[in-house]
Image 1 (cartoon, rainbow, N blue to C red):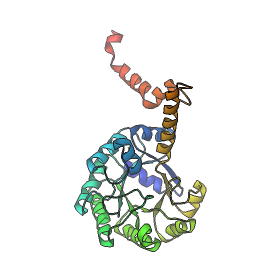
Image 2: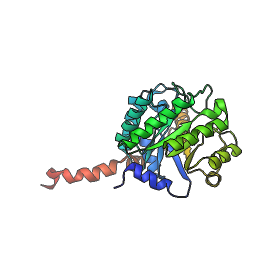
Image 3: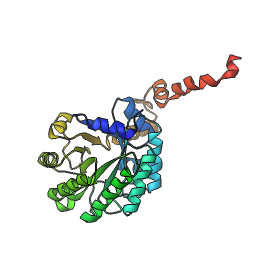
Image 4: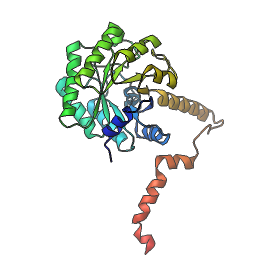
Length: 290
């Protein structure tokens, strides 16, 4: 069986756009896999909201994020890209972060150039570290990979916000020279900027589509024609789930139509894995066969 990293490399070798809904826990990841998608990403925004009920402002620790990633990788077969934030410290912390996510079964880990504590890429107040510190983070990530961590490096820059698109492209180009596998220039504001990113940068590029965010929400066809290899949708599932839960709670409170649009209990059990569990456990029920 190929490793998660090998599977992701094979996907990226295909000349196509990979649509990537983002998960936040093992159940959302399993639903993504059941829907037939080839890969997923553990959204920092959604994971922070789900795990600790707090905004994505650097509040979760490395160990909390790693634990969540491990829970997810143990529940699915498709590759998971993990959110390593800023690496949780200096270059040595970045090395530990990358190695830890590799051991947890992640196919790739994202390392970014924001100052700590980082912020969601589509919210105010973002700032990035200087060039050399940003480059050291990617150097350290690549070193960890070269020293045995079976994992890809997704290098992200948020420099567009403070310093303009040219600086963001320059940083991303250097990230690629240092050995990053996937490049992610966060929050371009126009189609023209997205086109420039894909025209100027080599290798696989990722677009981050936040509904209501700063980046144009283009069709899959348009994203592929521009030149992106991955289209990430970090909040689509969580926003959908939260809207449904709020609506259901409001109706439950009034005692009117208390079960609107609920998944059938049989399908719910099947998707969670009850039937698989029963099938496997039946092999060991020797008392029923005696």
